[in-house]
Amino acid sequence: MNWKRVETLIGADVDRVASMASDAGAALAALTEKIRAEAQTVEAARAALGERLDAIPAEIASQQALVVKCDAIIAKAEGDGRPDLAAAARAKKAGAEAQASALEAERMEAEADVVRAEEAVARLHDKADEVGARLEALGV
Image (cartoon, rainbow, N blue to C red; front, side, top):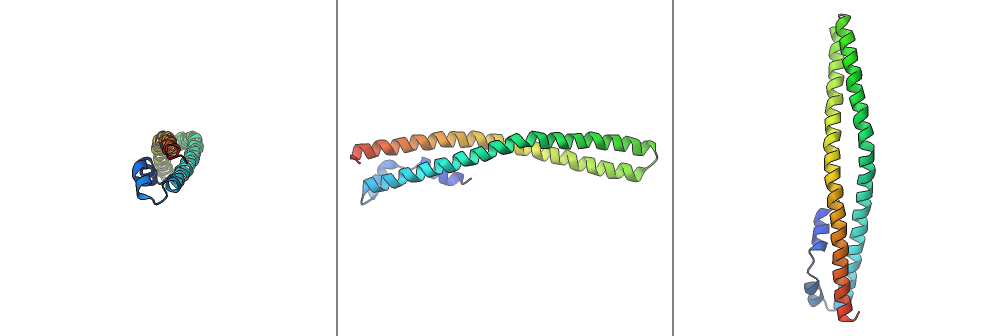
């Protein structure tokens, strides 16, 4: 997601855009289209984030199940006097724990990005309304 572009569009000075253009109506109409297109892009990104958020809990559960399985393998290997198997299971367990932690961090980041996207869409719609009002004031 290009947050800089989103913020630039949200922060656009409508009066300045109108005053600097040779055809204020055309410039504002183009700005409106850019804002609406960016809102659709952000909404699509938000939907993709939502899908990813839906998948993460199952992936975390899978890694946690692997940790439990590794614990059982470690206990059996130690009971059987197989330090080589216990060491391999510990390594696999560490990898699963690291993956679960990484997934949890991804989940938290994705949740924050969803909130940011929702706020950005609302602000983009507000900006589009502002530009539309300016166009109406120009009689376009």
